[in-house]
Image (cartoon, rainbow, N blue to C red; front, side):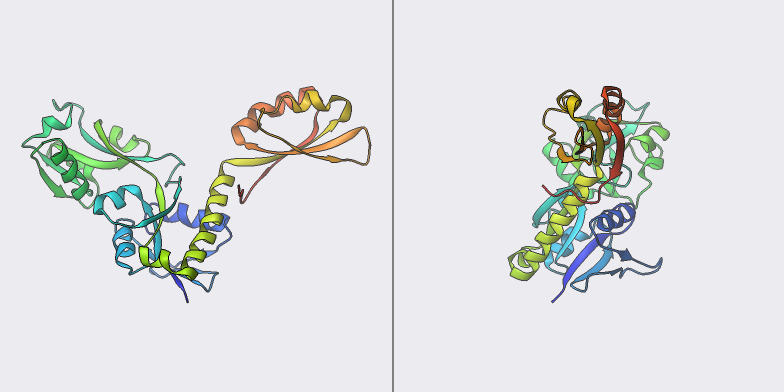
Length: 289
């Protein structure tokens, strides 16, 4: 038996492959192939546009997949959400699906779009949003590059943005946010009801979430004089309990703790000044809670 798994092709592909690598899976794909190879004989991966994955999962064409909440909402797919994985193509921040217009536009809310024309990849999501706000506007599908269409071809666009840099570069401003989206690991109802597939999916969840946890954390080792143990460890955040180990010299102990990179950046100088030595920061692959 195999688990047929949809992986997002395009902007999320590199970040997704990197996440799987940190989770312990090696995925290889040629530039012309939609059938990647993975070092797990029980998984059959397939590369798909993230827009297509929710529909294929809902219909049982594939068992599970990784896609954005934005695309699940756009197609209205009924799927089982296994977990949220907060990563995107550039950062770990959510993306936003936004309504945007040219900086010189007189439009300042969705209600100003009555009788206007919009371009978007999110046709169904946009049409629902307009209906909910009692707005009648023409919505046309765009194959991307919506930003260049404003204001000559359309009055407004609905696009996703992670940093807002593309909108600013095209002299556009955000009017409203329709949806905040992160990557979701989803399964079809039939696959989730299958005992073997569910166990495989739950194992994948543990490893992928562990890799996500580790991406925000580092390990920190240090040696400290036993006489100053309480003073030095008191510098650490209150909820962080280090692992302590004896050293050959009975007057010294080793301490090891997991922290965020920012915490380590702020704490290392203070720990050094307080008497800690041999401070070593090291990366983590997986952190399982």
